[in-house]
Image (cartoon, rainbow, N blue to C red; front, top):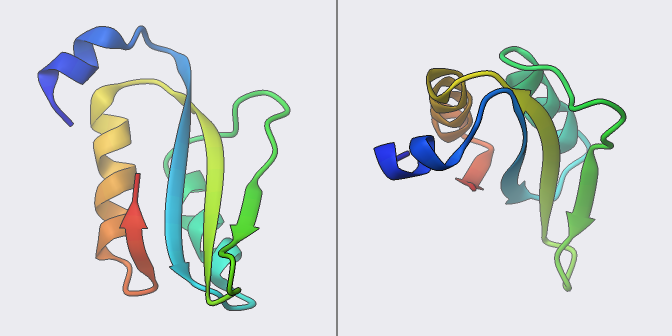
Length: 89
């Protein structure tokens, strides 16, 4: 993340985190575990999983209560370190 993004955010805030990977029964659980290790869900926000058109991939979006830029950096680092996560946005 850049300092420009950090200056645009006012913490705490709702921040959507999206991870994409190959479709499997456990992918959503893996993403949940990584994200919730660092943050809690933003109020009643749902975890949204969407399959790709062909069903080979899935994206999982979780809106979290972001407290700081370092917290978001840790979430993204853990997601990118995970072999099952192909991309995190």
